[in-house]
Amino acid sequence: MASSDRTYSGKEVALHNSRESCWIIVHGKVYDVTDFLDGEYTIMWSTRRPTAETDYTGRGVDHPGGSKIILKYAGKDATMEYDPIHPPDAITTNLKPEKHLGSVDLATVEKVEVTITDEERARQERIAARPPLSEILNLHDFEAIAKHTMPEKAWAYYSSAADDEITNRENHAAFHRIWFRPRILKNVTKVDWSTTILGQKSSMPLYITATALGKLGHPDGELNLTRAAAKHGIIQMIPTLASCSFDEIMDTAAPGQVQFFQLYVNKDREITKRIVQHAEQRGIKGLFITVDAPQLGRREKDMRQKFEAEDPSEVSRAGQGGVDRSQGAARAISSFIDPGLDWSDMAWFKSITKMPLILKGVQCWEDALEAYDLGLNGVVLSNHGGRQLDFARSGIEVLVEVTSKLREMRGLSFPNEKFQLFVDGGVRRATDVMKAIALGATAVGVGRPFLYAYSAYGPEGINQALQILHDEFEMNMRLLGARNIKEVVAEMVDASNIHLHMVSVPADNLYESNYERLQGARLREI
Ligand code: PPY
Image 1 (tube, protein in one colour):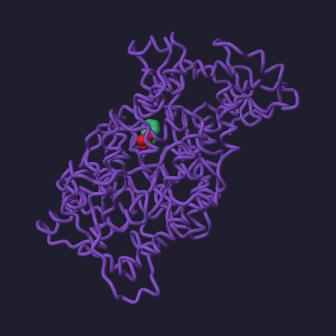
Image 2 (cartoon, helix red, strand yellow; image 1 turned 180 degrees about the horizontal axis):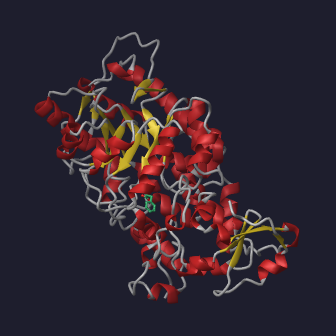
């Protein structure tokens, strides 16, 4: 690291507070970020270690949050603003070594004045008034508390989904079209809901799926999930766009803890290769390649928040070249993802890694079949939590057609060791997971509920969420008459309505109380 040993005073740093010379302090270090103001920045996540000038690619991509937010901290300590939304090494890996200027004597740095708005005061009051954790009975409860206690922007980012959010609701609703056919008199004194996923032990047939920007909900971000996964014997899928760095998460894991990695494929395949091989070398046991996001969906709840936060003069520049910031920061930072990814890349992935390869975001049997024929190890039937193509069908519905067609066309039965099927989206109960297992899934991914659990109650929240799921499994395995996961079979469910999107189901009051209708989102006052 070419960082200078020099120690600056707060006063010296404060002189560089303009567009012409813009220094900021992050974690006691001083950086010259003047170049970031003019499009020399791209998100290069965690495992990127630039070695040459040419590695600082991504030119033409502005800082995703816009230059305004950097200028707000020009000459000042930006740590508080930086921490929740950047991996710790984002600045060091993106900024040329000569721009790492040295340290600052923090005692001499003027504190950035934090103005507490009425809104924030009210939020703090709601946090203080949360019910004790012992009163939280299910995953919906965490969501309800999170909705009222998270910063508005964080809630908007986590909860938002594409367009009219029809798929987001359908993901959950689809489980209501599947009913149980329990068996009786099975001696269910002992029940065991543990399983193996890609050959790795898991205490439950579910895993923590990848979700971005974990620090928006809690300062420890994804590390909350890592620790809870270790404690409860489940697998965490580490996201490419985590707030914590990949290595920080790996270093936090318990010895022998199994983790998967979710990959966004970078336009620059050398970067992708480096990320993949680093993941493998650090012991990742499965590579989940996201294939449903060649462009980011419009999450309007999130976009409205970003729109509100922007200076109107910045927003009006949207569309005049560069990054269209009226589209929200998420869309701006997604520009590194390669829309040119196609089936022919799969051979390349096989050539660069021995990790099991799974496509995440498959939405019809034809693509599942193609993945099988190419020798991949599985697919996640997923629509990205309803955040991509609105009116995409739920993963659980797609599961039914995939198992049936792959049985018909390739003679496969499920669950299948060689080609594993996963489902995510809308899961709130162990019974949802058991429905997917009965229909042939190996395991189910759960994302938002765990974010809500730790956003609402910190590490204890996520522990409680996983304990609730264990308790639900224990009871429902007994009530279904299944002593182990192998006994949760297709005959135990009636999914005959799964493809009918307009059947009458009982009102889902718990879910509906958390769902936020789009007209409820605050519009910017004009
Ligand atoms: C999502 O928000 O759905 C993501 O998958 C993460 C993300 C965030 C920002 C850009 C691209 C993807």
